[in-house]
Length: 104
Image (tube, rainbow, N blue to C red; front, side):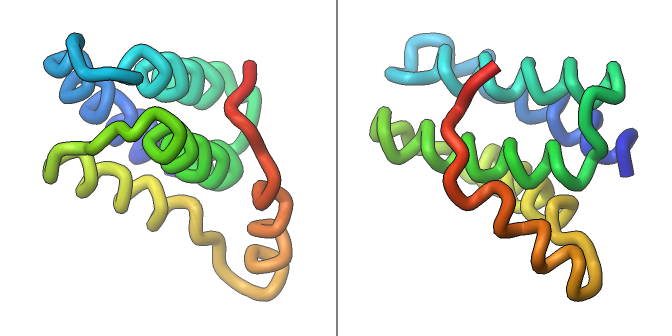
C-alpha cells in the first residue's frame, strides 16, 4: 500500500507542477510533497497519510477556490480509496482526521 500511495502522490505532483500559475497551487504542491516525504520515510503508515492528505487537499481546494483537473480528481479519488481502511477499527480511525488542518 505504501508503494501504491507513493506512486499516486508522484503522479499527482507531476500533474500539479504543470499548473504552476494556478492560484493556490503552491499549497497543493507543498501538501503532496510533504505527504510523499512522510510516506517514503515511514513517518506515518500509508492509510493514515492517505486519509490526512485526502482531507487536506480538499481543504486547500476549498479555501483557495482551486479547481482540480479531471486527471487530478482521479488521483485524489485513488488517495481516498487507499485511505479507507477496513473493519470497524478503520471506521473509528477515520474520525481522527475530521478536524485536521494542513500543517507540517
